[in-house]
Length: 226
Length: 226
DNA sequence: TAGATTGTTAATCGATTAACAATC
DNA sequence: TAGATTGTTAATCGATTAACAATC
Image (cartoon, rainbow over the protein chains, first blue to last red):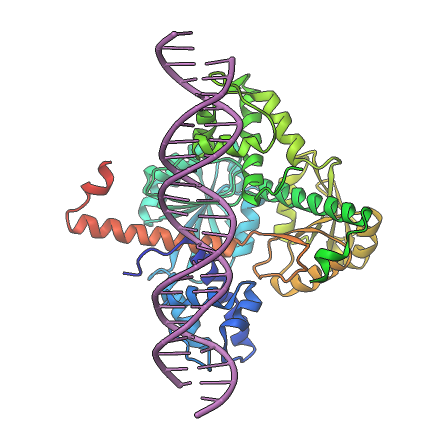
């Protein structure tokens, strides 16, 4: 029914909700699209377009009711039941993910974590039970889990993903620094920290160079004035 | 001189380099664009277009020389000097980042890490010296640091970023789950794990629903056949 | 040479931005 | 009412995809 919504729109709605929650905590009752845009870092028109998909309407000259909008966004993006999620890989990154999500969104719940390393399994870390890799298939099936977080070394990732896809997983977040091949019905979101860091370094350098250049040629004023 | 290259292109080049490095380790000497595309998950034409910005040419019917291409990508995206980077926030996520990058890319070097929590500072974690937040300005200036990784709680992030921008930082990776406001000359790459997880959960649900629907209406075959 | 892949240009696609009548 | 903001459509922009002559 909601037609096709882009992944970026969903990610932005998630961000708006966080901003709105903060606003609600500060007892702000209404917000205009341009206020939300200023906080989220976009344009007012984009915010309005994004919010439209939730079906909730603002009112002219009064903007959006914060609490009702939070409700509408939640109805739209949250699954009907809290989504059970598994984490594969309990190394440094995996443990950080556990800590990061521990008791955060009730709509998403890390149900189990897996690792090949025996010293890490059959324990409870940040409230999450850890299992050896062998029990992965069973638990996925038992608990009807459809979403997984990949936090294993790059060399292990594809093997793990193949198992997950076989077991019926439909969505993945991939923290491993390698591209994954998956069947077309599986949605993958890549979080490539290495690429992020290298990209930031590249642009920081570019900008440093162009600043230096402009400074050297005395052409600093033009771009920076407006 | 290299004109304007999009952030996505740079991120993809970073990914290609990693694939090429693996290929080189396996003594693969040449690769075609379609082989690289299959491993990176794109199209051959896109790979060719991306590689063009490095200035390195493949040759028809022989493809790209792996080692020379790695060299060309490195020349293009790596800064002339290893880029010194600071990490702000040594909580769970910060420590995971330290562990993750510890001794990885020589082109990028986490020089120092900062936190307000005294028990975490004036130590060495994963080979990186940690400092109290107060010394941030001094060290940024001393070591001419232009890139920072933000791994502090959302409530602290904007304050930290303001300090960083004042100190002349030009690029940021933001792991804090809040949008940041920065001067226009500062490049920001957001890594929003909460939004990623919620987006994956949303699409996993959508797909589960449409599978169920098609199965119910007996219309499973059509889309999946081709 | 014939076949395949290259660099590069043209066509397509999708998302963002700007504009505007409707509305409180 | 006048003013401001809304939902929504049209124009713009940029990136991706497809196509093709050049080349090994």
